[in-house]
Length: 572
Image 1 (cartoon, rainbow, N blue to C red):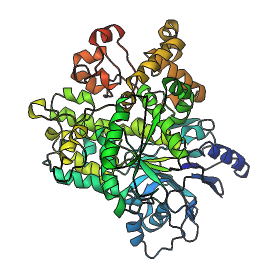
Image 2 (tube, rainbow, N blue to C red; image 1 turned 90 degrees about the vertical axis):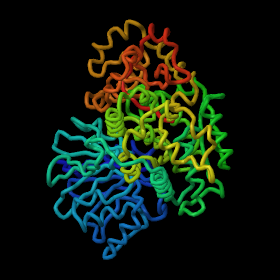
Image 3 (cartoon, rainbow, N blue to C red; image 1 turned 180 degrees about the horizontal axis):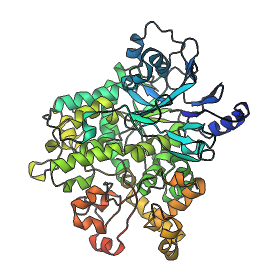
Image 4 (spheres, rainbow, N blue to C red; image 1 turned 60 degrees about the vertical axis):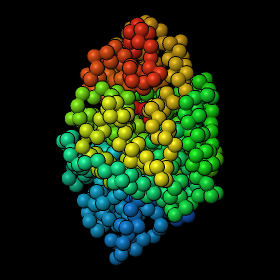
């Protein structure tokens, strides 16, 4: 995963801006520590901090077309770049980089080429022939991108907020599935799948079709020239990623670190995830790396975590901290890329609150809302927690083609039906329930969901709450609406994270990039309406799903504490 920065249309002394651009680009170097690139043309700059994964020797950026009139800086991976090169045989490629196709596609097709890309990406492209430019972000928002505006009329783009927040009068998160065009003005959506309109699909469930689509999504993400591994929590999603990757590794193009697939897990000693992950790793025969952290080590890292992930959302911070610590250990082992299981719960209604969905229509609409919001929560966490240490996370569940298959299935099949023996994500579990050639042990395949922040050890969240209670007084929380009138924190934990965030990002525009609203067990605000009791227990932990989670919070305790937080997220 790389870091990009682009500043276009500088009004005053563009040449004198070069040292500042280099300084700001350096703020992204954790994302791409392998090389730095900078292109300057008239009043425009394109900067790049590279994490070399495909073609490490010659794929430095920015990238160009044949005569260097088209310049592009890209963060991401284009999985179908070889097929696209076949359509561009009249073009001469300078590198083996998967991202170089973007410059040539623009030259061949103009601005309407973005939907041809299969991958995760954020890019800015400058056409020096007329000084026009475009910027685009992948369909779901797996890679981060921000857009900002300077007082001099300049337009800014950056992978992370920290690279433009000081210099822009206003900035915001760049919408996923959108393109910005200087010629046409403003943002327009290039990604328009059938599910986006939230109409109820009716395609029958075919287990083998779903299984093959997911296997294809995993295999295409084995495109790498450097060592990689799989983040394995022992839950369903990460275990399926590991199972499929290990099954197809020998026939893939992946550069590998020895003959075994490497898997990684982190948790407090004795946590549910560590035990389950080891069992899966032993079953699959992977080279497993188990990392431990203490509650105090996590607390000590909070400020650094919030600086890197650029949010004050409670669950995102809870789950990002162990992932941030694990990524540091992974990078220390020489690994640059990992596969991860984000997205499955949004697509299949895997969060425990989906047990209370009143009908298939509301079930499906909630999954649509969850997918549309992924860029603010799980995608943000997975990308920035790993990129903080120069590690790239790839997420096969968020493959465009796989999403289209999964979201076209009649949601009646996704409904949680205990009377029919269907638990959450039953259709995914059933698709990989192969008696002849098993992917996973049965009890792992049908393990109840644990959100990542819960699965690393329940005492992690309890420890965070205790620490926040020591830092934030009752008087501070009582006055929260005056100190933080926008997205007012309603718990001491939320207040504590907000104070750290505001230290790094004090502008109004920064706090507006973080959404809010009531949530229970990672639900959207709309889904809180599904159960009247939830309004008394607005906490994003899976244990807040009273009567569903086997380790649910004690209801009497909940009635007296009644915590509430902003946002929804969390992953196995």
